[in-house]
Image: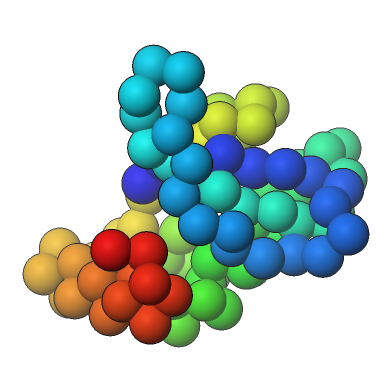
Length: 95
């Protein structure tokens, strides 16, 4: 899943879906942690794990560790993950 992360925000939250200039959608995530020493990345993983009700160990940032644009991988059964994320998106009115 692609993310657009804003560090040092006033509060941590998933804001919705943003589309970049190239037309690629990304989940817009804001975290209060600063972008230093991996603090913002750890905050992103913690926030998404809490939002999606998954263990933090199942989430890994696989691209963009030092960038605002990140790619996160969710480990586990693809059908289970898809159902979990679909239910979450519906409660947030993202789809």
